Structures are given as C-alpha cells and as structure tokens.
Image (tube, rainbow, N blue to C red; front, side, top):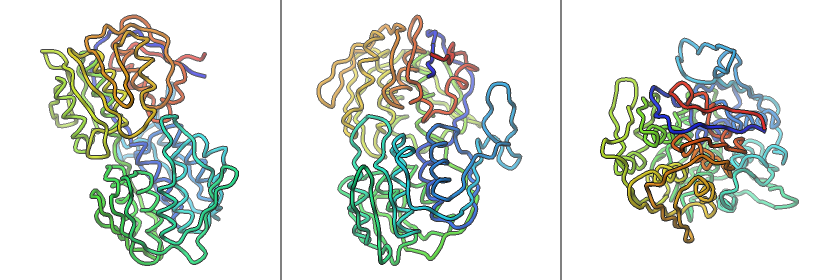
Length: 439
C-alpha cells in the first residue's frame, strides 16, 4: 500500500494541466453499453475508478481499454499525444461484443458509480443483475431514487443477497418522473435508460451538474434526442438505436478547484490550464471572497493569493449551481490558514466531515456540531501522520500538508488515486516536496 510524504511550507509556482473529469467520464463510459458501434473517447483520466469501469465494461461484453500509445506519461516513459488532440489525455476505445446483464460484486463493491450500468442494461437487454455499489464511506447515497424512477418506466426489481435484479418484460417506456431530490446518479441513470425507451421521458427536478450536461452531449453525439440538459427539466425522446462516435471528456472542475486552493494555501502562483472555469462560479466566488485572485490568460487562469492575506468565509454545500460538496474538504483546509472564523454547512452527505479529525491532528481548530463545522482560522498547521478516509478528504490532507510546517505522512492514498490523475507528479514540477513511497 502506498503513502505520500510531504515536506510542507513551500510556495508553488508554475503551471498545471487539468485532466478529464472523473465524474463525467464514468457515466459516459458506461453509456457505451447503449451503443452497438465502436466509440473513441479522448481526454480520459487514468484513474483507479476509470480502470474499474473499463474492467466492468469488458465483463459486460463491451470491450474497453486505454490506447497504450496515448496513456498519460509515467516516470521512465514518454508518450506523445495524438496530433489531432494535443494534450487531450488518455484515449479509450470501446468495441461492443455480446452483452451480459450481470455486474459482479467484486468490481461494483469498489465504486458507487457502477450502479450507473443499471439503466443502460435494462434499455439494451431488458434485464440486469447489478451488485449494490460500494465506494467512499461518506454517506448512504441510496439507489432507491434510481429504482423508483425506473419502475415508472416499466422496470421491475427485486433485492436479494446484495444484488439488484431488474427486468422490463415489455421494454422501457417513456414516463414523467419528478425526483424528490436532484440526484446526479439518478438523473444520469434515467437519462441513459430513456434514450432507447419507447416514447418521451420527462425528468423534473433533474440534476444540473456540468457532468450531467456532458453525458447528455455525448448521447446526442450518438444520435439521442435530448433537450433541456443543464436545466431542472430534461426531455428525452427515445430512438431505435445509437451510433458510434468520437468524444472528448470535459475537464475536471473539482481537480481545477483543488489546484486553485493549492496555489492559495501555499501563497504561490499557478497557471491552471484546461480549466473549466465557466462551470466553477460558486467555487471561484467563494475563493475570491477569501482573498484568492484570478487573472485570465490566453492559455489558462493564473491563481494567487491577495497581498492582504486570506479571510474567513461561510459556505453551504448544495446541488449545482451551488457550492459543490466535492470541494468542501479542500476549502476547509484553506479556511484553517485564513484570518478569522469560517463556517461550513454540509447539506449533501451526512458523513462528509471525516477529514476534520485528521486536520485537527495537524493543528487545525475546528468545532463540529451536527452538519456544521466552525473553523477558527490562522491555524499554524504542522505536519503529522494522517489517514485518508475518502477521495476528497485525501485531497484536503494533501493541501494541508503542502501548507504545514514539517513532514506530513498521508496513508490510504488509494482513495486519492480514485479521482486525481498522478497528483504528486503534477505537484513536483511546481515546487512541491512530495513523494510516494511503499508502506
């Protein structure tokens, strides 16, 4: 098992290229199940969750793998990006074969997004057997919203021995679905299922996240009839089949936000390239409120700290376009170093404060009360041995380690590898003293 060792206190300077978005790539790759022709995906991040998804697709009968010529560079190997897609990240090719309807527990247990194969399998095969998902321990994230919505389209479900057994004997049919909560996964599952369903499906109170929009754009490129994506009402008219295409995954707004905070927390200056700042208004406004500066450049966004230092602020995590829960842990690390108090209210996941105790081990002054955290700023963070509990908590601890005096040792970084492409390899060229070692 790997761990990261960080010698903190060094301002970061240079440029960082943002990878493709994990949260967009996962559902888009699983949407390959709907398509009966080859697909080429560009700007795919090379991550643990992506590899799990490719293995799952292959088991389901849709051969999927990275094109070895275009894998991201690793130490000791130089790989050129294809000329027509310079800097476009990894290339994945899928080739449909004989589809299977079963998603086994051994794969699904490691990644919650695996449940997103449920809708596509029902749409293509009329049946599915999908293990209940696992992943980060940050909350229940039940799939009942997915199942009740698919039932309105004609699906029937049984839960037995940790598996979801689904079938639709008469095929999926369009329906009017009003979500109780704008669930991202539920919206994505229904969006995919409805593309091949008979008739029109209307999703109300749908998730508006940019990654949902990217999924819709991919499906449209394959021939789907979708409108309203990016709003709370999405309309899908079913089509007989979807065709193959070539598609580039959107940049990762959460990775971009994490590196913005890396610049600010170390009092450095980073040029963030391939930055989807148009999808990051809530994060950018809060960082500006804290004293972070943003300067547009021809090839990216230059991020630095205001000369007057950092200030405390208040955030409440909300569905898009509100402040994203996936940035809560990272901005809390920044709050620890700001002048004055900050307040964080987590309204999405009930267990997303597990990084707090680890930050306290590093000298942070944070008081928890239910779903609210009061952060007393101006903390003098000090390096310490800490343990990551989930993906975004891992990023929070890396950021704290970069700012802290002394050495920080972060264990269980396999969480980090699920969502950040070679994070330490991006940090080293901009001045970070960080290394990966085997325990």
